[in-house]
Figure 1 (cartoon, rainbow, N blue to C red):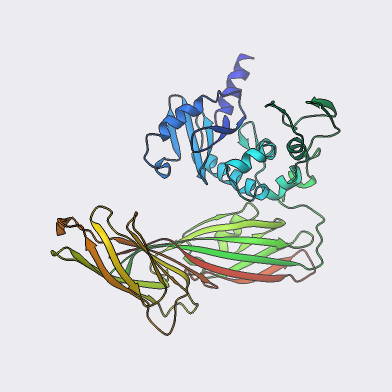
Figure 2 (tube, one colour; figure 1 turned 135 degrees about the vertical axis):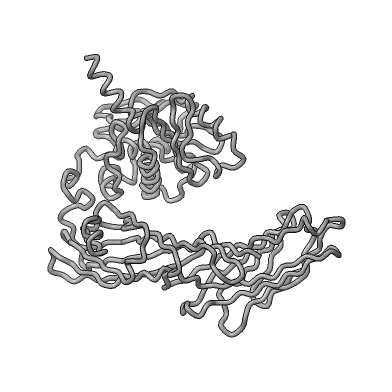
Length: 459
């Protein structure tokens, strides 16, 4: 018995002991324990480590204190925290927390502190189904929505009953039939609310992510290719440029379709990660995606590409100079590169001037609107859609605080934002789609969007 107990404790330590959700003040909103009860005071140790950093974004995803390891992911001013006290795989835990956030967004449209408090019953039910004993068990949204209902009758019932004071209400998970008293109300529950009493039939099959017997009057599948361009430009050329892309899929196909998807220029992809439905071996052999898709919306793959093959669609040429007399001159030209045939929209240029040395600015633009934040000393130039008949130019003067030495004035790093529809900067295109095991021909829709990520121009 002693040996069995030690092995079980070591086995639990391989992964997550507990999962917490904290707000920006370190308050615990949700706590779920998988391997014994972990006192929530351990979150105070984590928060003391967080307070050592000036910005929340500076906190590393993995920190430790004593015997505890804290692995967290931040989302919309919330900390999703997993705690373990043994050897673990941090990337696996981070992936689980990312998937937990993704699943919650299927149940809660605007994921924030208030919405988590309102839907806390659903959050606990999702955590119950996603992990078992600290190990990820079921992380596929399509499977979880069949296990946990989006509309929770128990939670809606509690909200509709006026209760004086504050009481503790047990979660419906594991609640059987019977009655209980809530204030002056007497409530009867025949079955657990919000949770399915039976596992889905396909949960133990090879294609657990897809239910059997699906039927649609029109069979169609849509692919959304979204790419973000991270680039550092200087003197008209890209010093460093990388593209991060993902392909979202919306499948509405009958039966059990087996799909084969091919790309043009697929050899340009440096790093790829796939949904569990994709057969990895087929991709490694011929760069072709072979998969049985889940029903509904899911992320098919992520990828990254870099190097000389990356096409930068926009060119920003800044000329910013400061003189000894206490003033500065700004002249910025924005052009669309001829390689990009699609129109560039939502173009915004942000120029962060020094807060300590700049007193005022007088900038005008030939295209768009110029906004200047006096407190932050930031100029925002909103061009909107790039015109083809004229070149957008921002020009003007900058006033420097009297007595500022010219050696202390630094040219700002300009941030660029844009969005292009029906264009992929990486050159990746979906070529063909083949269907097997079914006798119909599905409709295929493809949409591509390229937008700026961390796009900087050195002046």
